[in-house]
Length: 196
Image (tube, rainbow, N blue to C red):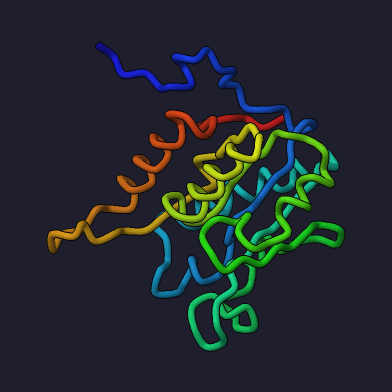
């Protein structure tokens, strides 16, 4: 028997939204993931895909929210240091909201919910780093809050993880498994979507 997702079994609409009905949330698109000790595999390709989607959202005049992880001074994600800043190709423009977070879930202790409420739509497109961590936890909570979530798989990436048995789970496997989990119930996963 061929496996199927819970969303498919429920007859859910699995088409990504048109851009004129969505808000874009970019999660942790920071230099820490480009060159730091937790640099992600496939970063350049993910940034390129995110930049294309970001430009299309700007052209469509849609709400865009940039989420940044904020670490302690001198540590990972120090927002005053180069590695804590946004990747230059994805820098916010004037009028685009910036939300700083201290936990993986971008809704926890932040103004993200208020920013999205102001946008007055229930379609979210998520991109960012890391697929298995902040993208996943944010998508799961967004569903609980009543949003229909779409994740652009090409604009996300993650890193190798220890397997707990002195081995390594490669980044592509971590990424693929995280997306499969999300696609089962929490989000539409757009793998090769031409955003319009």
